[in-house]
Length: 217
Image 1: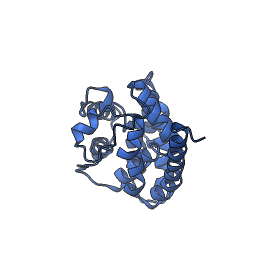
Image 2: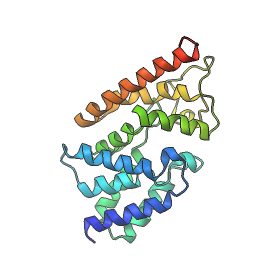
Image 3: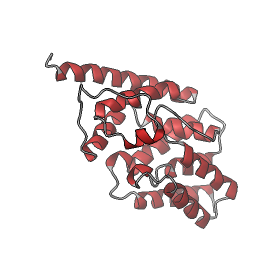
């Protein structure tokens, strides 16, 4: 099967699979990551097929919505790509990307490394910061019925992977526990450049948020 057809079929599959998904992790999130990955990869020597299908399938079954089970996404992706008769080495690469792309709290345990993973990870992290990142943060917090902010609950930067996954902290804490950390964890030159402006926007937002919270404006 030609690469363009594989990508087209994958887009159709993901759109169908993510119908009704939480808005921060729906098809539109995947599409933005897909476009971000294409943009970043223009300046990197990467496997274009792996970049495309890896970005499209990276959140096919986010463990947050499957009782923390991290095996479902890779399994779904593997079965789908085998049915498309994608080359085995490409499938194996995509599966490793899906298994390692996510941020898992302050203590990372990434066991696989590739330039394609670097690109997709940066693309995913870009969608977690800036204006879109702020919107996604508060939407997910509302989805989970979390507080916007509670001055008595301070951010925890020393959480284990399991503690991070089970956290019910206010949405503002998520900025310090993840979002503000991402700029310095970008892998590529392009990713770092794009992250800088989005990071600054979040800092400005937080400054305004605290002023309004305290009734200073």
